[in-house]
Amino acid sequence: LLFVSGCQTLPPVQCTATASIGGQDTTVQIYGVRKQANQTQYYAGNPFGWKWVSKTNFTQSTCEK
Image (spheres, rainbow, N blue to C red):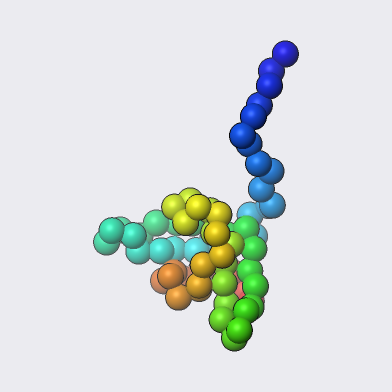
């Protein structure tokens, strides 16, 4: 038997975005897009740790919203 613990099921990737981290462009997978208080936020995977972050953290994206 194989037991997997500590894993979470992530929603499907909706789009990708580019963030400049440490002076290097990094592609980040985006799992959700929402508008909150007139601000667009992305539910970003690594290196953002699967959190809602402002669209302004990214230099470009394939997300439409």
